[in-house]
Image (cartoon, rainbow, N blue to C red; front, side, top):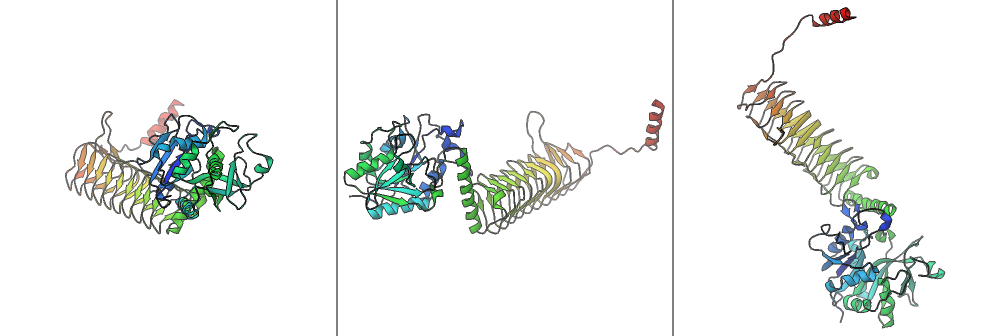
Length: 466
């Protein structure tokens, strides 16, 4: 008795090297919107409720470290085709549960498609259900040959001369490489699949005529959107798939209340989170696991990589790498936040300000032309233009501590390690090398000397030389 209601085991075939990519990187590890290609079907399978996901890789195990921890990695020792790939996962399959087979280079399959496939498979009672689609140009795809009554008779490969007849090549319904089988039936049939074809490989679709010959039904589940099953064979296909994935990501955020002014010039990775009423201006790139709160305005021309923004932040024309902004923070234009930068509520990093590994207190302002590194700054302080924390002595990094409500004069350099107390002041042009007590004014500069008539002396000297 088939337990068709059980959660499926999903097998993702990912052992191919993809020589047409002309790359040292395995094809399925090429990135699509912040996620390796193979990670897309894996994520869809997990979202669809798979009981187990098995990814089949090659003997070099180059997929290790690129998959979630709860994914099983099986090894296909010899590149002997799609049938061989599923056989490599055999020990991880459940005879009493449905098995869904996906391809690691068909990344746009969705969780909704997987769930619908499993439901259709259960409803028809078929031994196998395959996802097909109709393409205007089916070149390179296996053609689906239908039997009388509309069931699937077989799939004919077209990779090499002799695989298919001209009549079969004229068929526009193609195999997408996505299947649902009864586990036990699949395992029994795979053992009978041979290599009598031009490639000398075990083709997974060759299971279908075996099932039909023993009286089992094989049905097709037709996908209306060919983009769902678009495969990647080279970098042209990769860019096409990336464009579709990016459009989906943008639409998801738009429907969640985010304004994306110019989607064509905006890049948003798949794991980026954006709150409602945030506006993303043109030519902005949100990468990695960036999180942006509600009511923010990002860009134009801003890049954020693994950054965290609270609500109501502003970031025009800036670059943020792992920086953290609490609510109401404004940065830029031309601000650069490096790892470890924490800007607390209502603070500001203005034009041409670079901050690294520093805690900037609530309401504190670093308006422009400054570098703050390895520093802790209290709340309500104001650091003048050209402020520098000199934090490196050639061997070690040292921290600068600046208290609350400090008024830093322009062109002040703090030579770490140094501590400035609350409510202290520094005079413009000072180089602070000693601690400054709370409420004190630190002046660390030479006194001005004015030489009257200096310009005339210089001109006289030039005239005499000539």
